[in-house]
Length: 42
Image (cartoon, rainbow, N blue to C red):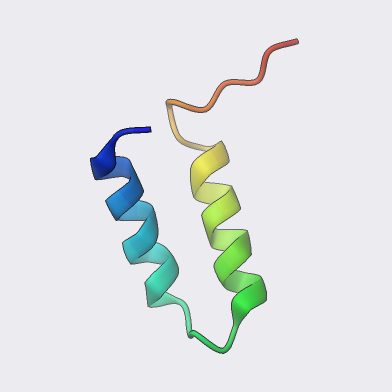
């Protein structure tokens, strides 16, 4: 994953309240799995 993508994900995760770790994790997982660089091989 490019450093630009990583930076964007970190910014989005940091926008979620720091006390809401569940939603921080959900946000990170959603953004990583929906990125164009994430592939699932079957």
